[in-house]
Structures are given as C-alpha cells and as structure tokens.
Image (cartoon, rainbow, N blue to C red):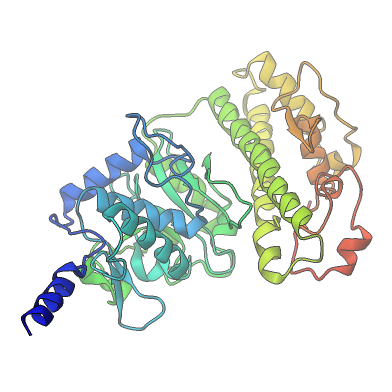
Length: 432
C-alpha cells in the first residue's frame, strides 16, 4: 500500500503545472503605451523575423516565423507584451464572447520561449484582418494618436493591414508589413515610407464602421463593447473628403516641410523597394510551381498571385508621376538635381501627355547612366525602373502564378496556354 502511494505521489509531483504562456506582472497604462511606441520605433523592422542574431549578438528567438499582414500586426503587440510582462488579450474570432490571452495553458510541456512561439503561431492561425476591428478602434488625427505601434488597415474588400513603425517629421507614415505567405515565402517583411492609395484603403466603405483607416489597440476593458464606447474613439479621419484624405492627414501630422528633391528621393525609393520585393515574391511562386507543376489550387493561387501587390507598385509609380508633374508645373523642377531630372525623364519621357499616351509611345528602355534601380530578375536578366514601369503600364507583367517567369516579367506576352487552361481567381491590369 505504501509503495502504491509513493508511486502516485511521484506521478503527481512529476506532472507539469498549468503554466500560462507567460505571467504578466505589469498592466497597460499611458506610460506603457508610450514605452510600446518607443520600442516599435527603435526595434520593429522588416528583418525582425529574418535576422538570426539580435543586435546584442544573442540568437533571435523569433527567427523563422513567416507572417502575413495581420500576423505582423498582432505579433508586434504580442512580442512587446511578452518581453515586458504585460497582458496580451484579444477577442476570440472563432467563439463569440470568448477571449484569447497569455493565460492560455495548452503548451505546458514547453519552455517559456517555446510557449511564446507556439502562442504566436496560434494567433497567426486564428486571427486575420477581419478580426482586427474587434481588437482595435479608429483614432483622431494627431501625432499623439497616430504614432509608432498603431495600425493602418483597409476594408474587407482588400483585407490588408500595415504596422506603423513611425510617423516621419514630414507627416508620412513609415510602414512595416507583409503580404500573404506560403511554404516557399521568406521571413523578411516589407516596408514603405509613403501613403497607400486612399481609394484602395477605403474601397467599398468610407466610414467609421469599415474597420479601415488609422487604428490603435483597445484596452482589455473595451473588448466586446461597441466601438464608439472605446475611450479615444474618433470619426475625425472619416469626415475628410476621400480625395483630400492623404494631403489633409499629412499636413496635420507634419512637423516640417519636405523639399522637392527629398520627396522625389523618397518616392523613387518606395518604387524601387516594391520592384525588388516583386522579384522575391515572383521567385517564390516559381519555386512552388517547379515543385508542383500542375494548376494551382485556390489556396495556392491566393498565396502566390500578385494582383494587389502589383497594383500597389503601380499606385506608387502614379504618385511619383503626379508629384514630378506638379513640381514641373509649380517651379520647373528648379530644386531637383540634374541626376534626378535625367532619371525622371527616362521613367516618364512624355510627362506633359496623358499616362495612356506615354505608355503607348514609350520605347524600350535599356540600362544607361541615367538608369535608377537596376534589378536582376530571372537569374541573369536585368532592367531598370524605367523599363519596369513601361512593361507594367502596358499590362505586360502577369500576376498569375500559373505563368512561367517570362510571362510574369513581360518578356513574353501572355496568357500562355497553361495559364488559359488553369482556373484563375482574379487578376489586375492597369487602368490608364
């Protein structure tokens, strides 16, 4: 009998306790929100999940996590909460009235950092851009409310979101984000120092009920309450005419004026980042296609197609063109350098004409001393931003992931016989 009792005791004492993901010893407050904002501005970047080592030389505990746009948003808040022993609580989108928090104990047998990674993966699987409105609220227009650590989201039509790393002194958001990911996707996120197209952000619903616009995290006490009851809730950003939304917000958020040459440099850099990122996501699709050469399923097509991403590059090029044209009309480009003028003339050779007319007349653009953003694609091939713009505006760049690389990059005109044969779930082409 004594031996049986001893064995039972050993089993009981050896069994793991009901460990939370982490134990919170602090509570969110205005001071912690400020510290969170400071942390995002200094620590959060596109390499957060792709760097193997931290700046202090230690191994990165979050290395190798693949995140889409909503995953990045939730991860940013969750990781800060974990590292500073704060609660992380959101609505459970799978069960009405329930919540998900760091007090979950389903990963008892793992070490703490392993529990955190498992919790992150669980959040990635459970949440999406559709759950963000229940965990956030729209904010007023000021640098105190639209700041590092906040969120910019679209409506359900385009189901996309960005994290706000910083609001630059010129009133422009520095956004870190990602798109849909698959098994062949990398770990590096994307970034931009520019405004997304407001028409795309608010497509289908420009109102405070859209879940779109600039938002911040709800306090735990406000989860499940009507959004208009959340402290700090504001409809101010929805009172502006949509066609003036970007200019109005930038002017309200700016603390200094952006010079013409600085603006052109920033806008060219944004297009270049999008161009280079396209190489990565097209290569991911081609890698998947080599492994699975048959027609893609809906799920794979959704991951590896690029209509929204191509449209965003197009929007950035259109913004660059409008800005350059406005500068020329305003002051003849007197503050632009000779190098900038030469590069812009190469990209937009018929700037005084319509975009459609320019696209029809623009000749093939070879790489010259005036080229900017020369990028390698499909192995040894290369082109500059001007030639990329020409093919994009002509509608030659395919966003269909069933296409070969030559069709994705406009070397060959599609659709190919294989792409015609395979089912397709949407696409995009420029509307000039």
